[in-house]
Structures are given as structure tokens and as C-alpha cells.
Image 1 (tube, rainbow, N blue to C red):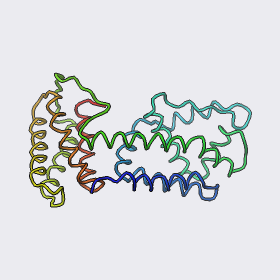
Image 2: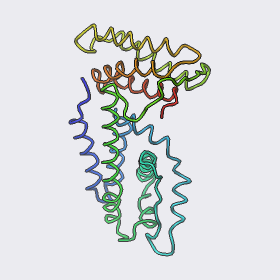
Image 3: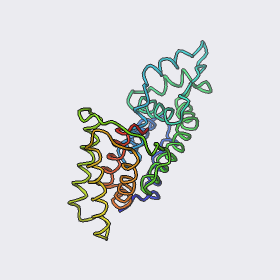
Image 4: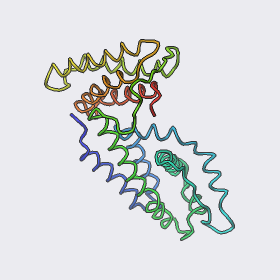
Amino acid sequence: MPYDFHDLHGEYTDLYQAVMYSNSTFFEENLRRFLEFIDEQAPYADVAVELQKLADFPPWYETQKQSKGSMVGSGRLEWPKKLDAKLGMQIALFKHFSEKNEAYIDFGHHFLGSSTHFDDMVSEIGSQLIDTFSRDFERLVRRRHEAISQGRDIQYAPASDRIVRLDHNSQTYQEAIESLNELVQEVAKSNSLGGDPEEKERTLAELKAVQSLLSAVSIRVSPVMTTLRPAIGWVVGTAGAGIIGTLAYNAWEKIMLLLGIS
């Protein structure tokens, strides 16, 4: 089954609204449940993992806390300029709230000056941070999913004649090849992908063609992208949120990293 964004959006919305409507008693637990969803549920997890790689949270947070003056709540948050880096840092901050007991109270003392009541702090964190984050994050997830499932790429535009040398001993290369090999194996043995055997056979041939291209010492980017996009798009559109769909997302991300596309 393909991803049903209506169902996924409904579950995502329910979880984030539970956080939004929490009082201080239930805030940390509800936030934990929301974060578990975006960490574990494809395609949200695929984006969340990449965003969190951009966040070096501990030194950033300590720097922000030092901006507080003598008055409670007088600190100022300076988020990363780029949206993806900002979202990654916000996820890290929310995990700090959920993992460290009453960390949101310390945050409130540094950055929220309207009230020292715990329920008011939770309400302000929800309205000022979590609400905006949830909208920006799901918008990014939706765009990424639609780009891959339609066999296109809304952010990558490598030159058609660009040549990339491949270090077969590097971890990046090995992870890309392993993820592609695993995807090929699962597609080959699956009996539940699509209703047209010819589509499966064609997609499998395209994935194997990419395997062959990546076995060279150097490659042109364009043939890899032209062959890989429709193959990954078909697998994701057919397999959806299942194991094979997740493998397809993983293979795509690993190969993009190998090609220097970010």
C-alpha cells in the first residue's frame, strides 16, 4: 500500500495537538510520544534523522542561555538561519525537554518572561515553538515524499556532465551499496509489489543498472539519477510505509550522499 498522507497527517496532528493542549503534568509524556512518532514513522523519520545531523545542540544551547540577563525570561534564542538546520535544532531542544526531567522549567526561566507558572510555560512553549515547528516540519516531509514518489527531485540539480570519483573503501560508498543491494534483494523476492509483473521486472532492472554504474571507479551523475529516480519512485509509491518503502528511502538518501548531493 502507498503512503496515505491523510491517515499519517491525522495521527501526526493528534499527537502534536496532545502536546499543544497539555498542562505541565502531561507535557513531557505527550511530547515524548510525538517525538517517537517522527523518529520512527516513515517518511517523517527519514527527514527527522537528516535534520538532527545538522544540530550540535549542547554548545548551541549553552550559548543561548548565556544571553539571559538579570531578569527572568530575558534570554534570546538565535536559531540557525536555514530552515532545515533550525528544525533540526528544535527537535534536539524538544528531546531535551522530554528526556531531562523538568528541563522546560529551566528553559522558561531563561527565555519565557510572561509567567513563572508551569502550566503557562508549557502553553507558551506550545504556541511559540511546537505549533510553528509542526507545520514547517510536515510541510518539508510532504515535499520530500512527493518528490521521491513522483520520481523527481525538488532540491537537487547536479550538472548533467558532472563526474564523481568513487572511493570503494569509504564508509559512505559501502553504506550506499549495502542499502541498494538490500533493496534489490527485497524487491526481487517480494510478491506484493504492484499488480503488473512487467513493472516490477523493469524496476528491478533499473536498480541493477544503478548497481552496475556504481561499481565503476568514476561515474557521471546524470545516468545514475535518470535511472534511479523512476525506480525509487515506483517502489515508494507501491510499497508505501512498509519495509521495502523504507529501504527505498534509505537507499535514495545513501546514494545522494555518495554523489555529493545534499
